[in-house]
Length: 75
Image (cartoon, rainbow, N blue to C red; front, side, top):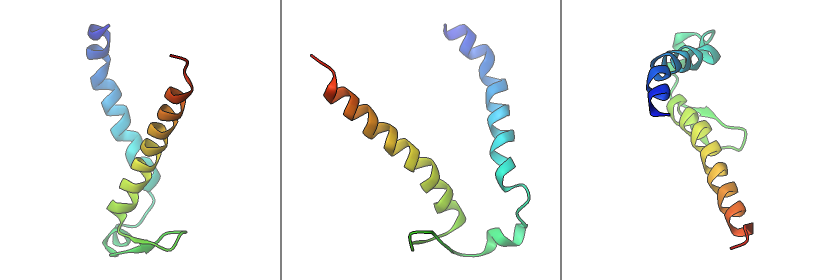
């Protein structure tokens, strides 16, 4: 129900923000100023672009899977 979601949203957002920072917590601040890093597939990315790619890559696969499942559903 919407009331439950509304009641839990603040705590969940705080949890997400806290967990978002964990993977990069031990990285020295100077490394973020470096303009680019090479990816494993040869493309050079800045930190922001690499993080965006990591998020959007999973979303793209989700959309692809949803489309495949929709195609296989009997009408």
